[in-house]
Length: 95
Length: 252
Image (cartoon, rainbow over all chains, first blue to last red; front, side, top):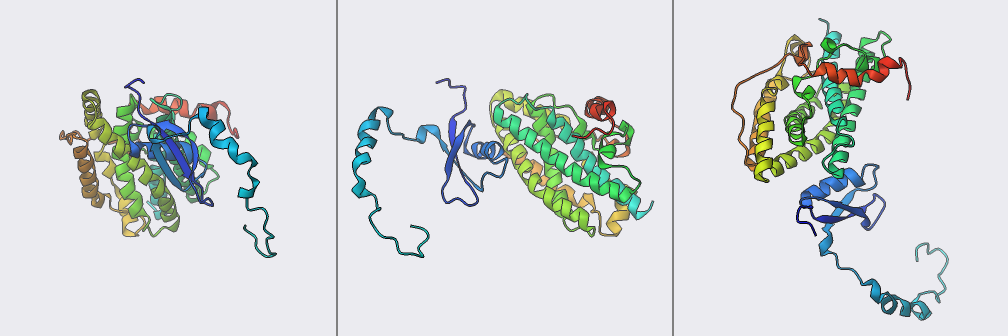
């Protein structure tokens, strides 16, 4: 990795109606303050959000794609883990 | 001069500052040092042009002679513009652009803050809206002054030069004449002299954080407010006015 490049930051935005910050992209900036300012300029131009998180990309740990099979396939045939066998009473809108 | 004439002149001054600086920043479009700064500078440009739009719209209602805000903005000759000399200075490089912006933003933040108390409700409303944008502009330019100043040897030397160069134009930020006097008495305009100490303190503070020296030379240039511009405005207007003059009454 070239030492002349600014560090890479992952940008997360929470929208006005949203409850969680969603990943919207990445950018390079010299430090956290500049990363937030840049994210404001690049990722909230069209009122996409009201809160910004930036995390240096190197701080993000991700699952290894090579492990995808072992990690994710076993849950596909275990329907008993899903809460789909209850009768939801009328009048309950969010379940 | 009547109150209406004074108010009109006052509004056009603020509008011209925003318009000309907006034009300068628009020149960065596609040329930013990095993508994020290209967008930041052009966002600031759009904010300023938006302010100019609101102000010119107000000005033509005061003038009330059928001239539209586009005609007012784009079809005057250089001696009819009343913008500060500061805002027509060339971009040159990122450091020069930031230094120019920094001095201006620091003034504008105090100015709009005070103007929200104007007896003229329209002016106060425009000031309130513009203040939010200005706070961000000031943060942006201040953060960059600090990083360029307290950066590498090269960035430090270059931003110091830029800060020194633009110092001579900061005196005009506080320019006042009979237009201001008329409006101050009515509570419409404000006494810019009351902003000087806060402006100087803020600027000194940020420069100090940036390990930069506050310029000390006493060159004090003015003339923009009364239509006597530097050699740069003509070229800027030639570009800015080209479309309006080549295609009169064009709509977008």
